[in-house]
Image (tube, rainbow, N blue to C red; front, side):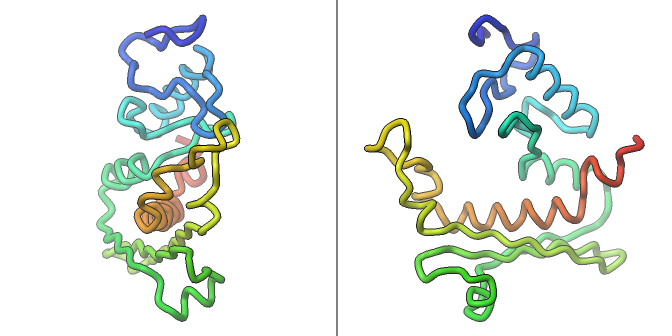
Length: 169
């Protein structure tokens, strides 16, 4: 599959070929590095477990769920909309969406909390490239789901800190 003057490595046609934020085409060496990064942590680059954002690897919610399930540490992950008190505590506006997620290790009782917020400004921001289109149509259409995903991602990232505690692997 051609990517500018580069091609995606054989067998990895599902790996994103652009930076998720900037939209810049990735070089072959950047794609290969992203694939190696995913494999180093037992993630699958073809399932979208890692992407590049601002030139740095970013593990997606699916990547963290896959990693967490592969660790065989019994856990529960629950998420819910913020209560009125929590919305106030976190400064979530009347037209914003806020979610809380809790990751609980059932064997040790260790708990990690994630917060996810989508602001009205995010939902209504227009594209810089095309001022007649929304910058993030998915955020605009499903803000509560994006807030929930952000909260779950944050809780999983805290409970399973990939690349921090297992750096010696």
